[in-house]
Length: 366
Image (cartoon, rainbow, N blue to C red):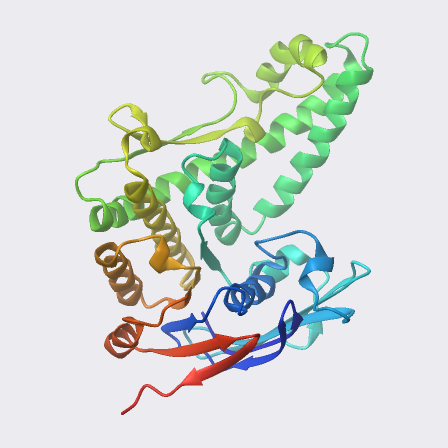
């Protein structure tokens, strides 16, 4: 899956931008504030339906404009062409289109163009709270198991209902509370089964990527389900009910799960240097993309913001070689163009200069 055409309208300082991306590497360089990251933001909007930088639509739309729009054309491995489009306005309205037809469900829209995002923020995956690692795992499940999004939405709805009942119930083990627990437990256990199965499928690809980037550091990945092992979720909810009533929220379930990333019995971020942590995060994203390809035949698009400031030249070259070998389409940004022409010539790619929201492709042929 790769983009062959991209149009961005009224996104921050990108008033009108049209690109015909290369199927391998696309490198965008320019000074800070020129619009490089906004370009990645536009692709993210097209693939996911939201920005990776903000949830405030007012800050996304260009000054004195009411609507932003991103349109793209993508080709799959069989050469089948599909068009995508998304519009958002200052009133909060969203319109999505697939192949010219309206798409009412954002989850369906977001499933069409798998995307891996690597930014200075994503390098915090290992040190962030458990929620970020759950999101990482859930990305893979979402793109392989088409019922997963609906299960998660149902679980969140039931969880809110149980939390509301906890605050109202005089007896934590009363029948009104137990009404929510049966379905909550059933849905929660289905989510857990999907997550556990995905991690099992992901581990060989994690090991392969880890050996390529961190060969001297054997890493263990384990899933802690969010309630005591050997107990059903329904039983765990019942046992925790009195405590949950005192606290006012549900303390057990897949929303409390953790993806443990360990090295020599310790959390990996306590053992690895900051640079090694960044390589491990890159390995995690490479593994997700490769597992998705093995399961579905779909290739990911990579958005990588300011790679040169995050990895040294040696590790940067190793990562780019892996991306090239896996034949993913990659969009990268940086301040300096030095060294990138050689990358594009070696692996195939194009360079673009970005200045004050204007994007100019460079001819790399002599």
